[in-house]
Length: 485
Figure (cartoon, one colour):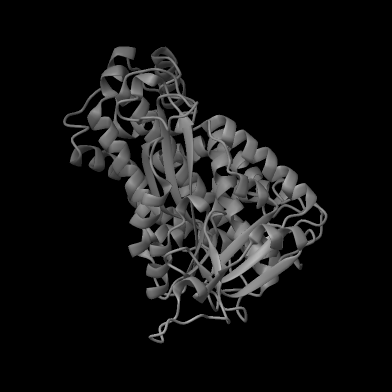
């Protein structure tokens, strides 16, 4: 790449960064934060701690508000933002109005359409406008919260939080985030969001969100789905040898022939893909589906068995004999035609769901959303929504930088490496938004260069990356990139 082209790329990146900074400042400027605080009644008169300082403490200080001491919080405010405030004043601020204030900031960041203009263009752009993945993550919390955050039961703790997330792959947008008790039902949430689907949306759903009614509704809206099929659901074919009553009506018992999926599984070789044409799914519904069966490799089967054993032990449940028999295969159903999505790509496109698992891993291992200790409920909620604000803002900025790296440098950046780098900068970014908004782009360019140099996605032999599966064109060579100096 010529020097002039490098300089032009840098200028284009800076220009694009300035645009997203401008949009974020509509929510995260000092003036707007104070206005939001007054609107929700958190700030009614000038006190010892301002709203932007409180937001810093709960979201960007690097502290866990329910875990760290009030003394640590006071010292952090003093050392980082030069604000002297007593521990008692901080404790008094951790109240219901503070929770409302943080929830409002979080909601505005989440719902701002202008903050999701970055796109990664997959090979399926012509067919799918959005690729939507829904899943949940849960973590235990102290049992003093069980009245509001009841746990999932079984061998788990009596109190827990479950966060439902719907994530859009092409834009990196968090479409829906719902916080509730650990006992919350995934299937119920899946049904709640079905009205938000538009034509050409693609939904990738796990078994927890399986619903024939939802699939029917998505199809009626012109949307697509790929879902795993529950192993206990009956699958039939229309029987050619139908018997009839004397009045000419067919005998229902002879109209359909049930498929023995375990027999099919035993005859397949590892990695084999088989399509069952004109499958009728469900004992009562008998919904006509395109059904594709994938036989796991030995390593994939070993991994599934290990995961299943851990889940069964954690929840105190025992898997049925039929589930164990079908453990070696994955059964998919979809309403996408084979000329758009061939059999050999269904397992791959469904594996994109792993992206949301990576997000949850980042939430817990890098941003420590599940670090909770007993404290008053308002203090815990301030930490929870402070962390969610941190996660949404970090995600917006990370995706923007990764999209720029793809477009300008043809690089696939690692989600986890990018998050680790962003976590080291995010406090300074927030403080820059507050005091030096014109300099934010310099910080973002520093992050861009750091991810460009150290954040490249690692490639494992025989395993496709996110970009590989999407069919995105990028530079595959494993080499250290020159920084855009």
